[in-house]
Image 1 (tube, chains in turn blue, orange, red, cyan):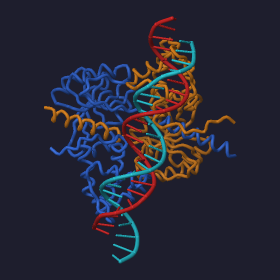
Image 2 (spheres, helix red, strand yellow):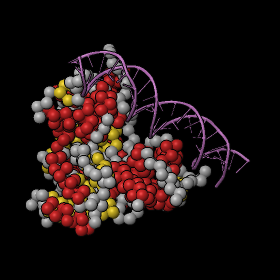
Image 3 (spheres, chains in turn blue, purple, green, orange):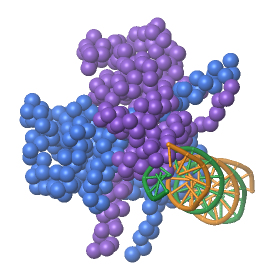
Image 4 (cartoon, rainbow over the protein chains, first blue to last red):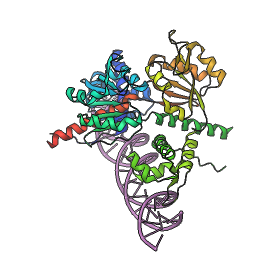
Length: 218
Length: 218
DNA sequence: TAGATTGTTAATCGATTAACAATC
DNA sequence: TAGATTGTTAATCGATTAACAATC
């Protein structure tokens, strides 16, 4: 049991998908090796950071040569668990929910939506990006029956906790939460919360600071 | 010139929109004051972190009482520049682009889409969530003419840099980049890059770690 | 008054960056 | 061989957490 029980750093994990995209592209172009230096340039980061990040996947490179492209793709996908298909449900077929169902990149990350759920009778029975929309009433039974482990939550804030309770009861293990609600779940259920507004906050502040700097210097 | 030239920490800035949502809700419910402790409970964080974060907006509270709800909303919105309307264009009317145009929360953050742009003749002339879709050919002239400062970029990766070059030439100052491309821009243009996959990477890793822990202990 | 909460200063923790020997 | 690149160890930087006096 040589398990290195070390929790990987969140910033590193978050950068891995970008590295994966770059390396897959290089693989597609027929490259055999890739250096941390090259990835760094592509990302606008320092090469030392790339090496540190890649180290958590267990890949090793060769001085002067770099990392084997194929081995690196494997290592990242294995580390993230993105090598065999994960079935998931999406709950809340609004604008954002529909967009996520159609987001191509998730397929290449082995995230597979088997069904979507909504309360709106006009949506139920329809197909969105080829995925059937089922009645919310059947959510618990379907999730349990098919043993779905992952749910993407794109319902209105008011419904978020109620839907979550159903999902947890049905045996869900991970919730990707796009609502701005802090979900209460038993601690064997993992929740990843996304906040679309936080990126806009960053942009706003960056622009404001630049503005001030310009005004000051002129 | 008593300008405290101190760059606010990114994690703090990113949390502010969530605080704003909570405090606005409390305001709506008629509360006069709110404590850091309460916000902390609502967010699942420590109260000291809330106090530290709020401090960057310049708000001050009163011991035992907390922060004035109205003053706090003001302070956060002022700090983020979310108090008067910012006109923006969206480029790339795909699934994600359409979803962002319809995302209600942005309106309350004073982000206003005046037009969208696409190359697809079937989309041009249509309206999406009430916003007209114009031809990409007119992008440069429209952005320049109306003095638009902010662009949301949701085009395919292959087009990202070319569109960016047009935007920069037209005088754009901030780009909210949803493509997985590191954009090259002159350094007076701010770019905020979003990576939807990074959240899924986090969820995947959290679930994998939990899995191992469970297996180990059983 | 008593005690909850703020704001400040200090301590800890974790992530990034630097330095450099090993090596392909 | 020469020099670019890796992986490791140490240093720096920044964010979070702790402690606590001030005070409403």
